[in-house]
Image 1 (cartoon, rainbow, N blue to C red):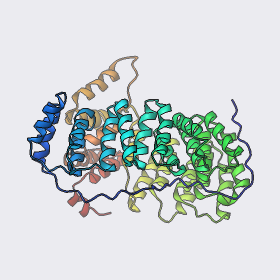
Image 2 (tube, helix red, strand yellow):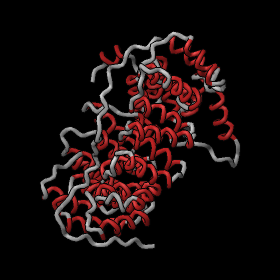
Image 3 (cartoon, rainbow, N blue to C red):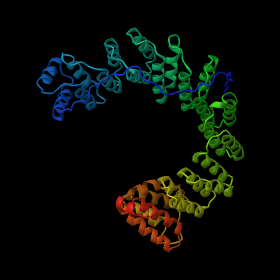
Image 4 (cartoon, one colour):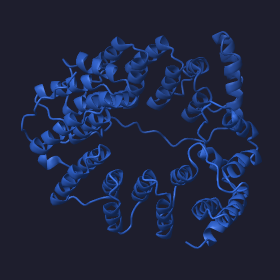
Length: 493
């Protein structure tokens, strides 16, 4: 099914601002220290007598000496993060103390515990109590809507807004947008859309509201629903923000709908020319290079420079990766040499592209160059190079003593991982059974110790003796990286 995105009317540019501000601020006194012995005694009583009669529990708590403060109540809630009964019964006990009154913070903490235990009836009862007391704030809305939406209590989600309105918390677009942000980030986009449409009579959605829905559906990969919300927004005379445009393009690219993504980009260039940013160009250039359209990517890159945007390493890394995918090594090197202080992404693009062309020696030379220029390799760097030199499933070396089996499989045995080594060897020796990938990541993790430093130094010497200089340098460098702080400080850069 082809997605139809209607053309936007040319109106005043409007950015999608996703930051929100809270309406109310609750002043909370500095927390007082809690006696851990008193806390342990109270929590023990609450746990052991959570099913006892109220009278018996209250007598036991009254006989226990402790200072009832807000911090003490919060610590009790932290002691039972997924059990509502001890927390709620302690809450009922605290109501008998005339010198203690709950705040929004303590109510929200208890509400969070009840929500995690999925006691929806009690959860709704506490919400009503908070509304009558006037202790509801933005955090209450977040907890309430997230919990009710996650259990598909959609009518209660709408009813909660009406309940708050009846108790003095008027319908607010800012509050709705805060709730939508939480729901969409937790992949509860369908529930968020339901709430927006049901409250439309009371709260008129803005471009921020629709923007969260579009980006939420895009994150879920539901382009049909995303386009429906997009078109609904346009019909109401609202414009998608730059971040919404970029999210839509990114989702179309990920779903192999390149032509439609470029239509969105062209629409943005015509209708929202002044709102184009570096991130927009970076996104388009990156996906053009992934699709092998390097010439078009260069044209977009030139346009970006003409519009006054400064080139960044991420965009240049995409161009390098695209050029190397087309075996244009000289041009890729030319771009890399033009960068004064390349970031690790540029080196990774070079290494990955060269390894794809089976140029392991050149890739290792780039590895040496990045170290020389002060760019520290990551675990990903080492794994890429090891897989290139030794293969993802291991490769026999020319020397019977120093090869993959003796270093890596034998290293697993030495590290105490005999079972993993045995499984790998068994599948290697069995005819017709596919050999599994060797997990270099786990192997390097096992030897990320001082013992590994010595081991990598010895292996590096042996590899150098049999002519495997590149592999020796990679392992030796990793050993140096795992050295203690004192050795690392003394190591020449």
